[in-house]
Amino acid sequence: MTIPAPLARPARGTARKLHGLWEASPLTYLTLLVALVLSVAPIYWMVVVATRTNDVVANVPPPVLPGGHLGSNVNRLFDNQDAYFAKGLLNSFVVSSCVTVSTVFFASLAGFAFAKLRFRGRNALLLTIVATMMIPVQMGIIPLYMIMVKLGWQNHLQAVVVPFLVTGFGVFMMRQYAAQAVPDELVEAARVDGCTTFGVYWRVVLPALRPAAGVLGLFTFMQTWNDFMWPLAVLNPENPTVQLSINNLANGHFDDYTLMFAGTTIAVLPLLLVFVVFGRQIIGGIMEGAIKA
Image 1 (spheres, rainbow, N blue to C red):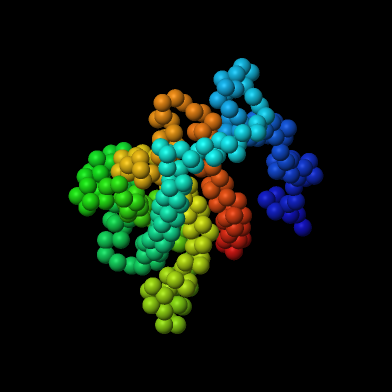
Image 2 (cartoon, rainbow, N blue to C red; image 1 turned 135 degrees about the vertical axis):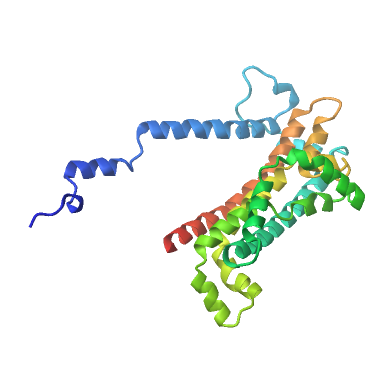
């Protein structure tokens, strides 16, 4: 019996070529190495400057090894009365944590509603939410600032928390993930067992959305921590976020680069810590979801 061509086993040479598609070439390793150097070099230079003194910053060639002044620069940073750096770190942690928890909760709840509930105007509402992603943030600063002034929230942390409790990107992302990761049969089985709508979300949908929620939470925390423009508009220098504290350092009588780079180094550490602690769990959750799918 002759085996049809589409079902026949590929020749040994063809199989070897297909296997070679999954092997990285030296050019691939070289490209990755160049990308790694270009990505890490600015961060390494920042750490080097943070450990040096101002008199060697402009040297040619520049220093390439860390110095021994990191401790003194950090002490000067926290002793600086114009930067309010410690308060900026605390404010950034509070704001980023609140915005992250709120965004993950409301976005996953709305994503579940758009993906699994049937109600009038669902598609129109989803289209409106997606349309908000097309509007640049800069266009909303003036009306949003006027609202903050009317509410009396100027120079208060709620001014940088409440406007970002949920995002259109988060809702759309969670809706797309819920539509694929949560079978309709599972939702119906939960309803048969007597779960309310919120019970279905809390006990069935939210555990299934954990990988996407982790990714959204990580991105939201990083974006909120690095936000500069809106806090600059509504907060004063005495009640800053960490990015405004670094900006206060740059507004001194002279450019103290070691102080600014020491502050930047400390400001980056929480982001690295969050990624190290939760990055493996996020990637593991994504891979688990992919295997189950």
